[in-house]
Length: 178
Image 1 (cartoon, rainbow, N blue to C red):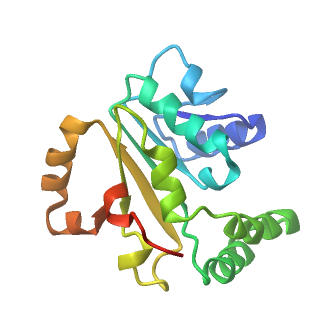
Image 2 (image 1 turned 180 degrees about the vertical axis):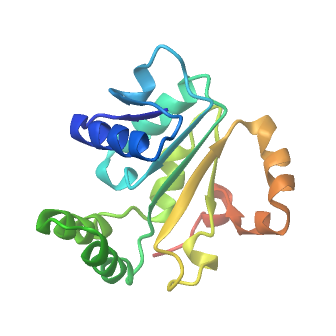
């Protein structure tokens, strides 16, 4: 199920799903206020829209829900992000506002430390996959912020195998400078 606060995006997603004959539903509303809670919350390009305490509130809502995990992909705060966003949005967006929004979004990207600090709420273990300290800046335009219930961290790392070494929690970035 896809949920968005923007009714026009929900309508377009529904239209595309019907055209592709996909078995999914889209709802206009708040994902945290649905009658049935999610098992995992997933988003792309949402986190950079939250500023200050609203970012922590976003993660607290997920920790307070019965969801087992979250995975939020967002723009990595690198010097190359605005250039990468410009190229991507130039190629993919038809409307000039969409093209402009991509570059502004890259400039609003949160640091790894800010994301881990905001996501470090009781009941959730925050992790970054391929944080800036270990990432190739040319390959990391988006990176996921992952949160799992503490009992799920070990099985999650096991399932990732060797890729689990690319996960970092708040303790790995403590004292890191940007």
